[in-house]
Image (cartoon, rainbow, N blue to C red; front, top):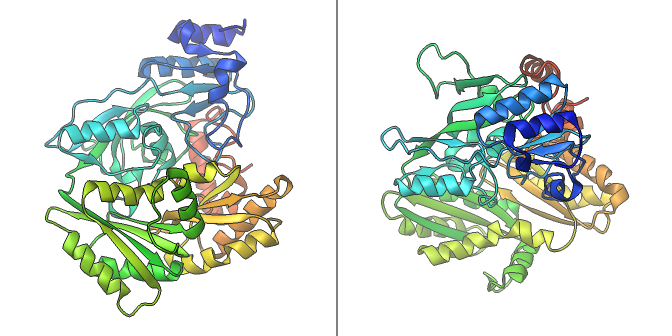
Length: 462
């Protein structure tokens, strides 16, 4: 702590002076998001240790009308977790408690700062599993995934984060601590608060401090296949056949040729196919009984009579499954190594998905990205795509983003995917939602945070 700011001094009394940062060097890591594109200056960074300290920090800020930016692992891509105009950043990573696993109830209560990987390992030690998984599992926090209602690679089987949350503890904008269930998942009859609206609110309604999560019985057997396909339409056809023959999918992920090439180059892994296909779809099936034969039969059925299925690999043992999954999960790092990347996480209906992806290069070129490289990957099973644009000239970034978002809306989709609206897509909220829905969002925000102190400038349009 270096300044005489009275609020900073009060915050130091709450959490201790070593847990309040206000010098530029110490704050820098909290002021820039993962992409490096979104950044600002924080009035201070505060690192409370528990819910009581979070409440005291929020009360101190509310008393002085100081705005707050809640922050977890800071793995977002839309500018929703970094300061913009001198807000106080409240880092929740120290709230990383892992409660005892309720094996019979299949649930666990964890702190908002616990990483996704830590929760997965904690559940696995008790013979259970958590239904959400992301490539950023080692740094993404439970609070952050709840705030954005993250989907992840298992979303096609288990649903997004909302489906995994039974109960929340939050701190409201005036410092009050509130606990409540989520829909029908949490409390006894007469539950005083349904906090479901906090999920996906991106830190604009309350600060999440802990969550009771639903766990599941993990499948004993898994098998993974990577199918080389001619295009997205072929990937969708293959996915449909595999579901019909092999049953529900644990995951279904789309990648494209350039993404595969960059991953192979970046990881040193052997190319999966003799000739890199235009696209590929990675599918995983799982169950209590062996599933490998079922998946092999499903892959054969997908390829039979469909010239769009060019080749296939099946991985049954853990090493092969890991190797195939790396071809999907290493995309973000491989693309980042190529230089600045403009990222757009969008959701498009499956019926419109192939046309949307096929038309993207022309859309980007027409908006000023003539020399831009378009790489798409993502959750094919639910139409949640990560659009990556390399080499977009800086003056044309906004125009290119708007063109892509307009194409998403024209296809009947939503420009905000599992990373949320953040700062990047605020202007598209009223273009992709009804006026009544936007009004309801505003009314909910006013009810939770009348003074507008929580994450201002995020999610809601001006």
